[in-house]
Amino acid sequence: MTAPGLAAANLGYAHRHLLGIEGLSADEISFLLDLSENYVELSRRGNKKTALLRGLTIINLFFENSTRTRTSFELAGKRLGADVINMSVAWSSIKKGETLIDTAMTLNAMHPDVLVVRHPDSGAVKLLSEKVTCAVINAGDGSHEHPTQALLDGLTIRRRTGRLEGLIVAICGDILHSRVARSNIQLLGIMGARVRVVAPPTLLPAAVERLGVEVFFDMKEALKDCDIVMMLRLQTERMHGTFVPSTREYFRFYGLDADKLKAAKPDASIMHPGPMNRGIEIDSELADDIDRSLIREQVEMGVAVRMACLDALTQDLRGHNLAAAEVGPEVGPEVGSGAGARS
Ligand code: NCD
Image (cartoon, rainbow, N blue to C red; front, side, top):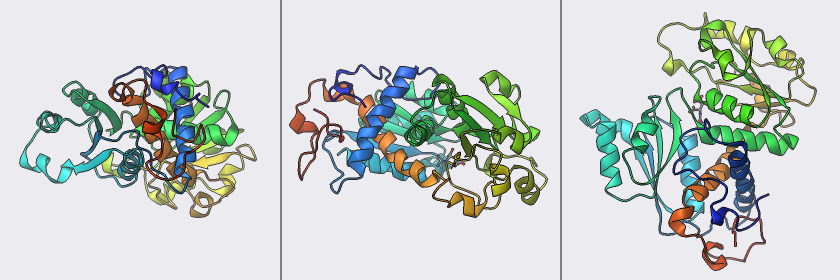
C-alpha cells in the first residue's frame, strides 16, 4: 500500500490527464491501484467523506447514456468533497448542433478542475483534452479505451488473487466493439498477465494478435486453466449489420455457463463490466454465484479507483504539502493511516 505522503509528492502519476492505459508504466498503474486501496477502506466506513477536493469542481460530461460509470464518478467526487455537476449532452446541445469543441470551450470558461468525459467516438476525449485547461479523465471513448474500468478490474483481480503478474485471463465476447477489452488488454499486458481473447471471428478486430494476446475461437480451449474469465456485453448499439446469427446460438457457443467454466481453474473467478445481458453472454445463476463472481466487487472497486484517479490528477492543484487536517474527514473521528485520509 502507498505510504502516506507519497501521492502528495506527486511521485506516482506524472500525467496531466488520464486518457488511456496505453502509455502508462507498471509503476504508475501500481501506484493508482495502491492509492485505490486506501479509498476502499474509506468507502466502507460510516462517514465516507473527506475534504481532500474541497473547493474543486468536477464536471461529468457524458455524450453517451450511462448510469453505472456516471454514478460511480459522481460518488467518487462527492466522497472527496468536490462540487460535482453532471451534464448529459446527448440530449441537449448536440441536438442543437453544438460541436464537441464548442461544448468543451463553454465548459472550460466555467473553470472546472476535472472534466470526466464519455463520448461515442474513439479519440474524441483526447481531442477535447487538447482544447481545455483542466485535467481530463476518459470515461469511455467509442470502442477505444475505458481506463478506469481496466483499473477497477485490475484492482478487483489483485485483491482476489494477490497479484496480476503470471495470471491467465480470458476476455470473452464482443472484443471488436469493446473499449473495456482494449484497456484491459493493455493493463494486464503491462502488469505481466497472459491475456487470451475468445470470440466468433466476426467479433474480433483485424490483427488482434498484434495487441499481444492469444486468440481463440472456442470457449473451452480459451478457458483451459485460466485464472480469470472476463465476459463482455454484446454491444448491439455499435453493430451496423449482423454479427451473430442469433442470441440463442451465441449463448450456446460463447455464453458462459457451468459446463464451459469447468475448463478453467477450479477457483477461477468470473467478471463482467456491466450492464449484463443475462442468458446471452452469461448464465444468470453464474453471474450471481457469490463464490465465483466478482461482478459486485467490480462495482465497489469502481468508486475507489475513481477516487484515486481524481486524487492523483488534482495533486498539483491542491499543492504538495497539505496539512493532515485539510485532507482528514470533514466530520467524525480521525481515521488511521491508510484509510483514505493521507497526511
Ligand atoms: C462498459 C462501457 O460502457 O464500455 N460499461 C461500463 O462502463 N459500465 C461496457 C459495456 O457497456 O458493455
